[in-house]
Length: 364
Image 1 (spheres, rainbow, N blue to C red):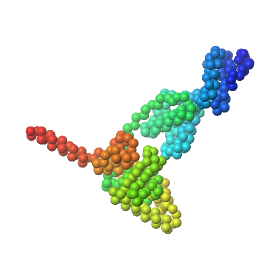
Image 2: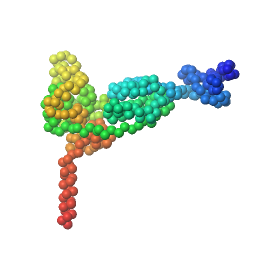
Image 3: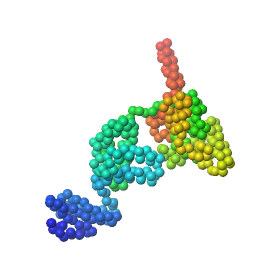
Image 4: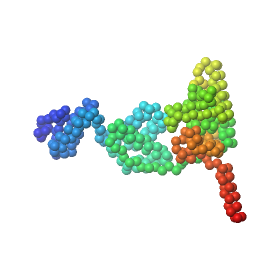
């Protein structure tokens, strides 16, 4: 055993010793949190070891946190950290993230080292998920979750870097939309509590969770406004919905208010949500929705398609994209363009003007 190992010489709250046949020098020290740390110098030169130990102790004096090597963190550490991150912030996408994380855990294993996750390993994951008949959009979402897990881990000093992530192209953008006749058939087929939710969604373009989560405290009948706080929207941006100039919407909200008062008088309970089943929050409407679609002869229709219907009506009414985006809670113009349906009557008028101009040119 060499001299440094035998002496175990303490050096300013740390020590240097040699390991293995090659005599590679290691250092040991206590960080700013009082935890014992060890690291290899990958050198046999005492000067290199002494300089490295001095640097670590200087970091301690400055109160800097020790950044462990990426190989010490595991895939499970990263995904658990991401779960905690979203639970602390009570984000609305927690369940979807957990579903994506489950597939990542299954493929790589919780004990896989984060430092072993490379671009090639991620490409292999994409191929494996394609082989399991997973949709391209699903795979893209799973990679996004894994990428965010690395990002959070870097902020928390669990890893020093993140791998490059492959791109998964998705070409299955949904375009289904109701027309007025289809919507009327659907509303007639829906039971009363769910019909009110669907009618509200078709007029406002709100997401299902925003409709079902709407509370009476957010409805201001005096000023004819409905307000959503940032924490209640998917885009984390507050929204205001004026309904004074929309008679059908105002009538729907008034009918819901009358129903609320009736239930509170008869049952002696307080009704907090705008849309309920006999005063109880509506947690799921899938069964009623699918049954009504079958009865109305509609195939592959989702509640979210009402959002596209509302966007089409805004476009047809000539509402500017900026105002329409504000109404629907879209953050980008590209998202608005995905949802809005071209107004063919406006296009017909535009083409008629072009035709008239061409004819005038021919005459002259």
